[in-house]
Length: 96
Length: 134
Image 1: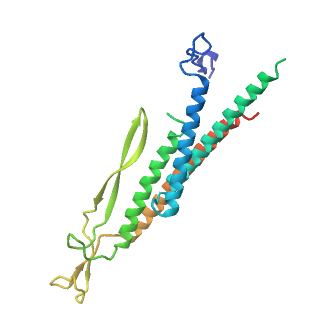
Image 2: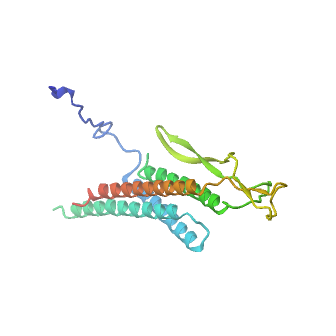
Image 3: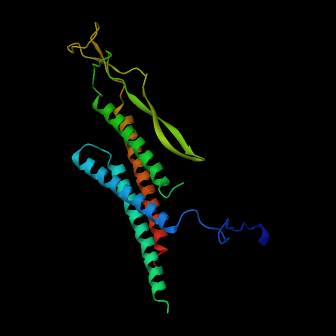
């Protein structure tokens, strides 16, 4: 069987408004702030779930573990983003 | 569709299997119970799972109902038993221990499958984060 190149589906990327001259509705730092807040709530949730489990109030082991995993991933994501921000800032300060 | 939607779905699966496990332990614990509040022997219970669609094509699982198994139980001859009828037979619960054991293995395996899914989801998230670390 001969396969034409045109038969193969291509991966297309919907660029949307990306790159167009358009002002974002929220600033980057607002996004970062809301990300920090989400991470904080999730970490608190995980904390409360762990405390409730230890106290014997909540027998949901799997939900506690999942909450902890979620919080861990969120924190790692936030750290990755902040590291990138600091890296960018450092690059700007070293401009000369 | 959030980063953690898959985890929430798996959590619902685990919750459902845990309920199933609770019902199985109730059945096993009451395998020889001849008295209930309603009268008569204990009746075996079963869980009914229902799909819960919360987003287009995405659904978690809910425990819709816990139903009683209507099949009649064994009649056991024991005239000395306080719950024996006029002929000396005691109505025993309709719990089949072998069946419960098989269901228990099923519940354990299904729970484990969900934990494996959670692990895979976590690994995928961490792999995605690794893109940032050059």
